[in-house]
Length: 101
Image (cartoon, rainbow, N blue to C red; front, side, top):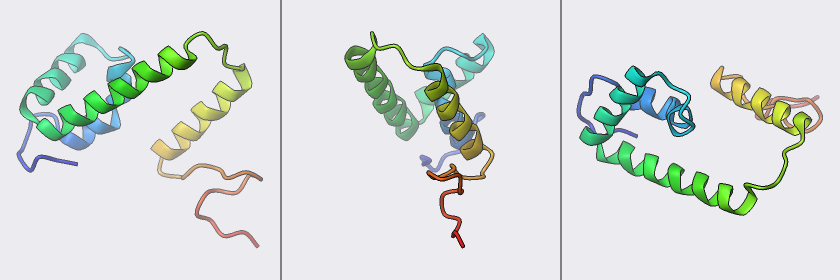
């Protein structure tokens, strides 16, 4: 996703770190760069708004539920694998998209 215009902070970087921004897990400087990007880039601002709305809905519907520690660990491991470009392990331990013998 991109509006087609150059930005100091590229759209790909903003979208790759959107959840860190939403979860307030960035430095003040990084947050300021993202806010500036959203002011300039309507597609990224729309994506931010959508993800913020989903997060708010999930919190409202599931905010009081305790998440089992092992589930959180598995989800975080899959996120890291996807970020590293390795895909997510499918049930049974294979990597999604990798054929099995």
